[in-house]
Image (spheres, rainbow, N blue to C red):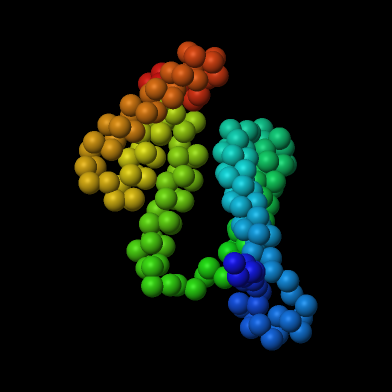
Length: 182
């Protein structure tokens, strides 16, 4: 039986600067670290949205600096750091290059999905979880190519209502009810 061939890991930074330059710079493979950086950046982005949504609920009482100031500064800082960390992780992964599998339509779809998440986080305190969840589900399904648009909103309503009931009635955690009571 022939000896097993050792798979040499891809040098992420070497992909960006070239193998010879990577060896001269003593750069090791860091694909795992780049992926962790990208995931951490996405977690920071999600956390920033939560903090900013909560900051909207606070009032400074007419003063320039008050209880809402710190959450706005913290949420804004998390947003900036999250974006920069995610961009760095993607750059280190070497995925900014457009391949034959990636098109401009894919980037538009990704932008639409991210915008839908941000809008959901902003409107859920005002419209309630069920209505906001219905809209989020419907827009996401349509963006991903669902064939029957009206059915997707019906499914979104059903899923959102069941989740709301499970949380509200089942485990006693109140999700935002909105003006309609659900």
